[in-house]
Structure formats: structure tokens, C-alpha cells
Image 1 (cartoon, rainbow, N blue to C red):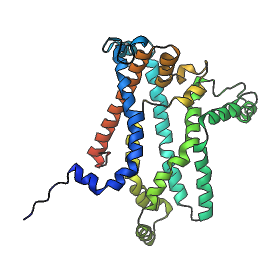
Image 2 (image 1 turned 45 degrees about the vertical axis):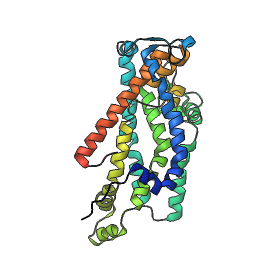
Image 3 (image 1 turned 30 degrees about the vertical axis):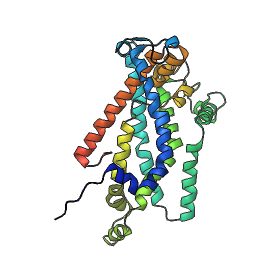
Image 4 (image 1 turned 60 degrees about the horizontal axis):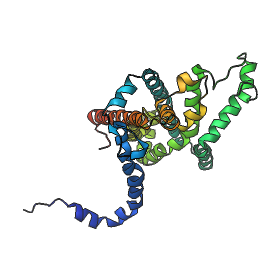
Length: 306
């Protein structure tokens, strides 16, 4: 009786060296732009001094973390960030799933390709351009939607300046821009469904809705769970560019989030240690949420990232 030896790391590299060579450029990029900059995390624990570099300055421990938690901005920033992120997940996460299921029902190949290309295109539009389009379309004086609202009796309603409408506009525009692109992975999962399952369902007399519910949705549940875990890992990160570009003094009470606050504190006010502490706090919370969601998914569905 022979006992199989576990392959060593060296043997694994030797066996799959072509694959490792293929991903080597990606590994180098990740190390340079993601891991090496982590050295600067220590700024969150120091009183940063320009003259002493990254390793200089007095060690102050958790001073800036405590300062942020005790700040009058902490509650508002956390509330705004969570509200925008949760709204985006609740309304934006199911959208590509529904779109993929609908596209998968189309049997006319040419029409299917045209529809897919149409819904993919907004993803490639620059965020700056998207914000410009929103400003033009939603302007109460010159925008098409602004004129339509005036005709319906909502005079002088500025959707981008009103705190009550800022989040819906942000979420809907985000869905419009990314729903097509995010549906690609679900379409790929649907394409791997065994055709015999469709044939069996039709023989049993299943209609389209029953096929979707009993064949297609179960096939993409592992993909849904994995992507939900990844989304929960960035729930405290709303994205900087779009929110910052949409900000104005009137919607600031709901549009000021942690990432825009870090930019204003760190770059504009030159409080680098304080900004580094806030950014690290944000990252740690996201990491904890990712681990927690992964554990829950593994516990109840046996599907996880690791």
C-alpha cells in the first residue's frame, strides 16, 4: 500500500509554471499598487511630520481613531455611507440578475446581441460624463426631466440639490450605468445550465416562469452568493468620484460620506494622519463585514470564498 505524498510548493510551481508566468504581471501590479503602499498605514498611528518622512513623527497610537469616533461628524458620515451603500445593494444588486434572466429568455439571436450591446455601453461612459448628463437632464431650468417635472406641477424642484432626492438619483443612475455589465457573469452562469433540464421541464409542462424559478435561479445561486459576499465587503465604501462630483452645498447633509470626508481632511486640510486613520477604520470595518458574510454563507449554504 503506497501513501500519496502531498505536492510541495516547489513541485506545484514546476508543474504549473506556465500558468504562474501568465499571472505574474498581475501579481507584480497588485504588489506594487496594493501591498507596498500599505507601509503608509503607520501614518494613522503617528503625528505626521513632513520633515521626517513616512517613518518620522511622534507615535500617538489610537489618538486619531478616538478623535474620529468622538467627532460630531462620525454619526452623520456613518449614516450617510451606510444608507447610500445599502440602497445601492438593495436596489442595484437584484437588477443585473433580473436583466440576465430576461435576456436569457430572448430566442432571437440578433435582437439579443443588440440588446446586450445596448445595456453594456453605459458602463464604459466616464463618471464625469455621467454626472454632466445628470446635471443637464435634471436641471430645473434647462433639463428635459426638469421641464417635465415643472409641467407636472413640481416647480423649481432640483433633484440634485434636494436632500430627499439625492440618494434615489444616485442609485438609479448607478443601476442604469452598471446593470448591463454586471449581468454578464449571470449570463455566463446561465449558459452553463444543462439543456436537458430545460427539455425535462418542458416535458413536465412547465411554463417560462416555472423554468426560471426551478431551473435557472437555482443554477445561478452560487454566483449570487459569491457576488453578495464581495459586495458586503465594500458596504462602507460608496465610491469617491461620483458622489464628490454630485455634491453641492444643498445636498451635503446626505452626500457627505466617509471617502469624501477623507479627501477633504487629508488633501485639502493637510491632516494626513487623521485621514489615514479614518481610511484604515473604513477598511477594517469592510474586512470584518466580508469575513462575517463569508462565514454566514459557508455556514448556511456551504458556499464561500474560501
